[in-house]
Length: 180
Length: 311
Image (cartoon, rainbow over all chains, first blue to last red):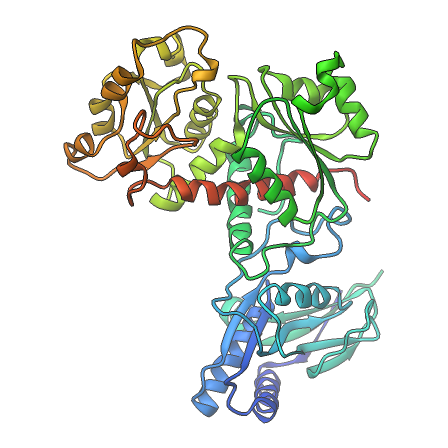
């Protein structure tokens, strides 16, 4: 198995900063915006965006974590976790511009479920999608991100892991290749 | 904890493990969030069909199950004994197999005969949830009761719970005893000698006939309804005497040096086992129990549905 670091901690920080400035450009004062991270790992990106935007602008963007387990399309079809992670949404999305964020965008099925789950909190005025890593050419559904940290071209045998300082002790993105 | 339940059916608390109960609670936490959202519905079970078979009267349990199923997007059919072929002499297995031929995946059943749910589980091909079988078990009620205790007091382990009233005719009592013990609580039953089964102490519960002593001991009091419909003889001289001996009043609660949590599975006989004032007070978590009932039943149905043969 070979590992290749595709974002080291310096590049990681630059990428997050760029994504934040893109959000600031499109959402100005964030008064009608909300960032929603998809559980389990999208919440780290959401929280990071919130803190960087706050440091740059002084604005605290409404940020939540959303679990999509009950909205998946593979119930009774795979051995996916049955028991959901926590959903922390202390606001509704009615009339808001929502940015759905996840660490890795792959087949697009999680995002499809995330769109449905978001709508149970009201009717947003719009939803945008952000992925720290976009695994291109592997989509099962017609879903494309509005904001991308880095695009990678991968094959099925490869795996992308995003490590977060908060839980893994370092900010890093690694590509694992299984030789089979 | 991603494995789901160890059991294939929910026949009684006796047949599930402590880990199962914890998985159900954890899942119910998420469903409680779902039922408090603007849109209270998830699509998880949209290809699952559930039959609710009620061979005995029920209002709140049936409503609670129906709502839980609808919030999970399952298709449901309802059946009650009064309007059925049962009165024409059809056997239980025939009745259920006829319903299952219409491609039903799960059966929620209430039946007056103890063991009916297990009998069904052994004889038909569907996931079975026992919604009360005679005087035997009522597992979802015990799950929502213990879940409500956990919600109010933080945890169930180490708590002292007294179940007061008609223990002899109560499936709620038996399921509660099993659930509380599995979760590490101490259990006492309290009531007139005639309504306490003779050998109940063998289940490891304390027995007390004096309500005041029982309340002084406990953290939680679960006041059961007197089941007049199951009592073929008089077990106590009069309702008034029962209310005086075993009714929960402000006066008796004020005589305690602590505030205990009051529960009741409903329907309440106001003025018999509990006064209106106490039932409506902040100490009582009776309406929380009802809300939690939907979340608990969603969790049980969802976790059992995951065990239906793969698509």
